[in-house]
Image (cartoon, rainbow, N blue to C red; front, top):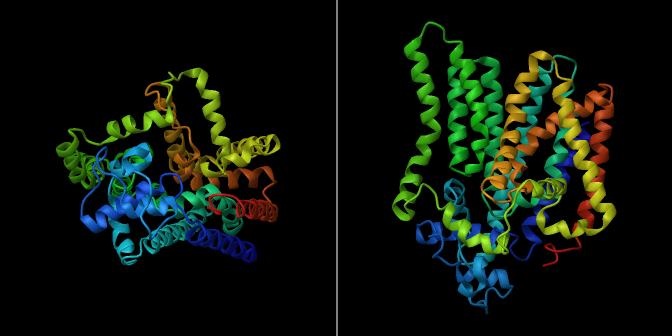
Length: 434
């Protein structure tokens, strides 16, 4: 088992390092995230959404001309020429700014240092996932081998989409770290029913929101835990009221200065409206009105979760597309089985800590599509919760394989081997090839 886990961690490190050094240009939204970090590091300010362009250095890296200036007019390039990620909460960018500055005047080095930071986040996720796997195995109630569970769950972090989104410069890496840390804090709060653990979970939710607002998906889980812990405080009315107020206030306090800043600059709590105005001509140029009829197409996009959007062209081949559908179906079925086959003592905890955040994110996607007319059915928005769901899937696979840990390990080895082949294929296509 140690050999398998060691091989998986080695693959994770190699894939992460390849992402750091072998991609000559920006991926997807990476340039806008990079520009945010650069603005904060060099100018001491958050980019103004809709006004600030990406830096000349970022433009030159994008065009492949650095250290020579870029040749294109940034303002004429539309969305890609603007620092549109300035609407994001600032925690990741504050953490990343000193790392960027360590690169000095070499902005390509600064980019690679930011990616190394992302690789550090990815490795931290692997460690946190192990800590969570130990807790889940111990609470299962039967003889569950934590390394076998971890070996199968760890394959989720080996998905090329997860590696690319976590390692490249963006707030996704810190988001996933805080996601797993919050899951562990919630798990411990459920098990021990202590005020201290509940308040720690509340603080981590607040830090998560200050990293990316999509981590609001953990608020329902936090509410369930608060209800349980406060419910155990019988006969202490004022104490229960004070704790409830603290659980609500602690996540909001870190956000308060940033929200005040946005109110002063944009007249709104966030600059989301400005970003949507900028993105609409790119994401929905025809002004199509989405509805239920769009839902099957949107859901099918989730079957591409193993690959980042930059590699979706690889799924144009019919057999690859159907392989994606089959794997997504098996993953979802195993996740459901992990809940169904859980004992009564642990089932509610698995649902609240591992399943509910993913379900909340799916609910937010559905609301955005049907009410907000905005298609957010992209796998990357589920990546923060996918590691926890991966442990649920590992539990389900274990149950379906007869509860034999050796079979679970072989399943992890088979998936790792398949992912090695996928990575070998991707090494010879863009964005690795520029």
